[in-house]
Image 1 (tube, rainbow over the protein chains, first blue to last red):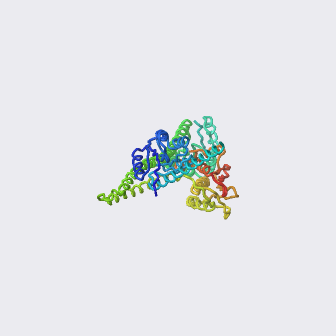
Image 2 (cartoon, one colour; image 1 turned 90 degrees about the vertical axis):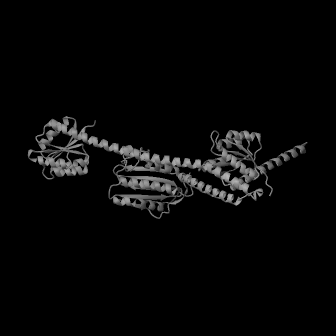
Image 3 (tube, rainbow over the protein chains, first blue to last red; image 1 turned 60 degrees about the vertical axis):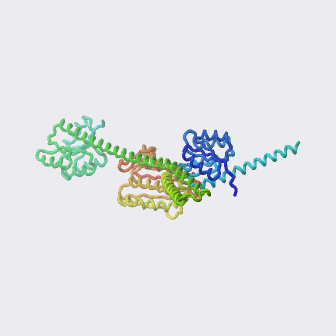
Length: 146
Length: 377
């Protein structure tokens, strides 16, 4: 099966963790961009096209939930997977209610993570495909009227 | 400072009445009794600070009366009045717990002085007891706070450890990925590396399971919502207090039985509530008393009530009983957190707690909970 690389944005204030997870994901063929805060995350989203954001719940400054809300506000099609080092799944579920695709507890099983990444990427792809088709229909209708 | 209350006990009416009148003019609350039995009867109705007790009385004599007083009203001080020929009795009185003795004829000012000293002792002992109770309560609170702090620290550590664990896992995982690649097929001792990395993976798994368990343990304050057989739960809780009840020969009954009453709630929390209420009822009931648990359920609501025929709750306390740290028990018996926590739990379960009481007659606590087919919040 041909691997379609997902464009992933890793957001976590733990630099070592971001570095190692990034290397691992790249090793399996994904394209990875790193950010170490909520603010940086939004900046990177402005600069680059991203499919899935892997977002840590607990960060100093702008926390995970706040960052999630900003992502969903400005980049509604981008999927977000929350990573929580907390025993409290409460925050993660709250995130899902605000639009996150799913969540994982840290330390996360790599296979679980890659599986969720794949599902999230597919969902974004499918939605973008529907948008393309809708735009085509719009075009046809317009030309039809002319 | 409140008036000193005294009880004059002497069979010589004239002496007693006139002494009583004189003492009353000196701002003392004066009660009187003509003999030992009357003395004890009066004390049972209205305790006093100091008893002035004649040694020689018909029927129950002074020393015997003194023994009874010390047994039933230990904090009351007794001053014995002896005649010349009976100073020996005075000394024996002191050995049996009297504060002091005076010889008749009594010098009035001297007597006043002794009463004042005796009352002082009563006050001092009461203050010491209160301080000890206060200190015991403080210690208990400190223990609770310490425990909470220790738990908070443990969970803080657990959270913190998850981060480096994640890093170790990713790093080891990456190494394994690299080793698994085709171009590293002939890497020297590749198998050994893979073995070690496998061990690291397993160990990280174990460590994260431990931290997860710790965090789960703290979380177990969360509430379940399941269908609970109230009769079974009530019987289970009755079993838990059986020993305490039997000690005081108190009978606890459950009525009516086999109603099939069920509630949609958390069995562990509900059991804690029932335990609290039963425990309170036991404390309020005297020996050889009875306590009854009632169960009732219609389609929407279940009602468990605990009824006792004990001392009841005075009107002025009725509003305060659900406040934290309100307690009529001594510090060693309770922390006063019982009803406050009970009410919080019931609220969390989506229910209500109500109380009816008549001082001297008894108290009933009602716990209302949603029954099945109704979703609890």
